[in-house]
Length: 395
Image (tube, rainbow, N blue to C red; front, side, top):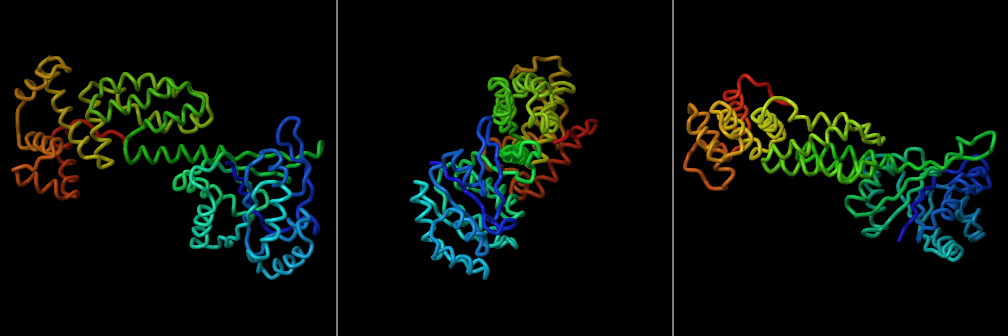
């Protein structure tokens, strides 16, 4: 079921309708002239339920008077609105009458004014309690208080994450943008802001995990062919499973696609994303592995950081010995032929202890694996000692 969540603020302008009648252009050939945008949107979107959201001083009286729900009840509402004292009991008869008239359930929700953080969080909790898991919703902020659209954006993200609510669109009937020539007011669809927040969230997820595969579905939604967007997910999969060669193959194509992509959100976030997947464009495999080690160390993913530090050391040794980079025996032999010092052995033993999850007999390694601060500090020192001539990569 789809529910329309519509916010009510204070009445203004015409004392009988609260808002002047406007001709809202919903689509080509679809013009609806109404004093309340909510009623035009109901006809346009045909939701299965209406949730009216307002404060104890919102224009309940003007709205329900215009809907001719109950004359006596409206008189009581006029007094209550003036005193900022509307109660659920005063709204009940109007809910019932409007439900009968529209043929869909109508519910009124009283919320605080969102003056502070406590009230703002209370509104999110109230909205969640009145919506069902997996429900589809439309949000109308046309007649709400001016600060509520910002809260509505937060609510949309909150409800999607904690309630699995599918926010299909945010609407604003822009009467103040009425065309003087035609007398028509545009209907603004603000769902693009939600998709922008999806990208911002994906950047945050990447920052924590290094998994840029989270961008693949966003790029598909932005118009990139699915199989091309999936290259990012493939690259992330191989990279996070210690296979930089296959990761490079996938990301090479993804980088080209990102630079040529014409979708609006891809263009907006593309530079940040391309900067994060270009580790393979400089140097040899050993340089790629070190660059990845730096990135994972920066986000405190110590197992992957140690793995790539070790593999970078081995790859340099293979180049030195002119061996086969992808041959296990050549890699083992190159390590065995390399000059050893305490840093090299510590790196190898740390990798083994973390990869196999076995408690080491080495007291220093035990100590490092029991103290994150010391492990982080030591890994940075190991990186500097073993790869002194190479600068840390961007994360």
